[in-house]
Length: 117
Image (cartoon, rainbow, N blue to C red; front, top):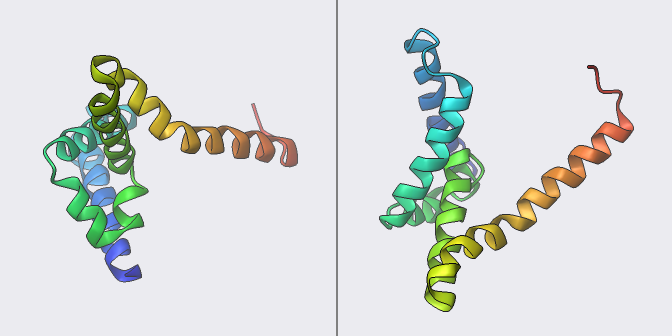
């Protein structure tokens, strides 16, 4: 399982690196971030991302495409339960734990280490 995660996650990251290296800096890291999240949403909405998650586990959920997948699945689930408003509520509730963890651990790291700036 670890090898599958490494290969799939590495392939996703390789695509981002190639996009940055081969486009003469016309595609910035910000473009890659937005593109990967959007691609994760689209591929998930088409029902094609979950088989990749089932195959590679963290190799598919940790990269930014996995965040897009999480948002799409939250929207789909909540839309089925709450209707139209669920489209907006679902992604926020699905991603809340991960976003909260990132904020808390980032704050704790800033307390422990001296940020430069």
